[in-house]
Length: 374
Image (cartoon, rainbow, N blue to C red; front, side, top):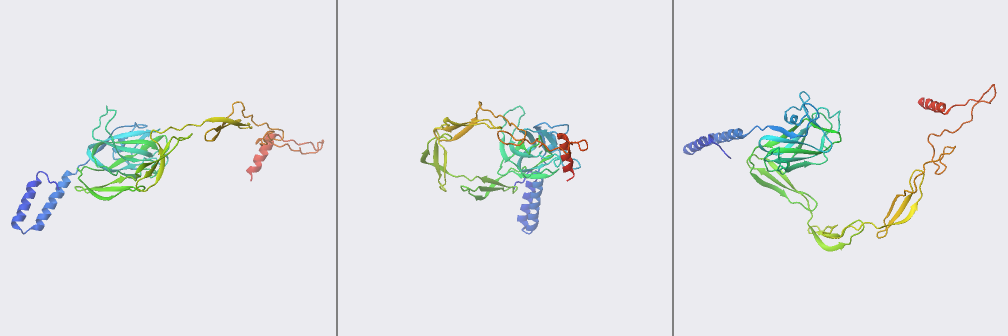
C-alpha cells in the first residue's frame, strides 16, 4: 500500500502510540484502515474523453464529438452519424493515460427505423503520444471484433465489449471501423470506457496451456486495484517437415508433407522454394451447337490432367426463339407466354345470329375480370 505526503506522519504517530500503550490495537487498526481508504480516494481521478479527429458527420450536430458528450438517452440523445462505404474512424484523447478494460457502444436514436447502421467489424488501438501532423503514429492494436452479431437495430441500447490481455496505459485511442451492417451510413450515440488509472503491478494467476486444437489462457491480477485480465494463448500445432513431397500439378505448386510433433496430425503445404503450379495445357476436343438462348460452345480438354472446360463460340451465337402460329418455338418447343389460342367465334353467322368476335385485349380483360372475382 502506498501512502503519500501528509499521511506518513499520521500513520507513524498512530503506530508508535499503539506500540507504546499496547492497549488499543482495534483503534490503531481502524485508524490505519481509514488512512488507507482516504488515500485511495485521493488517488482516484475523474477522467474525461474527447473525440479529437475522425470521419466527419453527415450533418450539423452529428460529428464524432457527440460520442463523448454524455448524452445518449431518449430525452437528450446525440449521435455520430457518418457516410460509410468501407471505413470510418475516430481518435479519442483521455485527460490522463488510462488502462482500458472494456468499452460500450450505445446505438443511435433511430436504429429501429433505419436498420443496418450499426458497426460490424472494427479494431481498437492505443497510442502514448499522438500528433495530427504524423502520418504514422505508433498505434498498438489492443482489441478487435469481426462480423459482430450482438448489436441489434434498437434505439439507445448499450452493448459492452471486453478488452482482454491489455497491460498498458495509453492517453490516445482509435477505433477503426471497416464494415457496418449494410447501410450507406454508420452511427453510434455514445462510446463509454471501462478504465482505470492504476499503475498496475500484475501478479500471475491461473494458467492453462494451449493444445493443438484448444486455446489456453493466462490470468493476471493487479495487486493494487485487484483488476483481472485474461490473455488468450491460441491453439497451435507444432509442424515439422517429414520428407515426402508431391510434384507440381496444373492447379497446385509442389507440396511438402508436415506432421505435428505433438498430436501427429499431418498436412500438405506449399513447399518453400518449390515449383509453382503448371497451369492447364488446353486442347480443343469438340463443340456443342447453339440453342435458341445459348451460344454454341467450344470444348477444351487439358492434355495433362484431363480437366474439361468450355467457352462460348463467337462464330455460333444463339438465334432466339422462332414462334409459330400455334405459339410454340419451331426449334425447341418453348411456349410463347403472350400467345392467345384462337377460338371459334360465337353465333351462326346469319343476320339473326351474327358472329361475335372478341379482340385479344378484350379477352385479356375478360380473364382479368374473371380472376378478380375468384
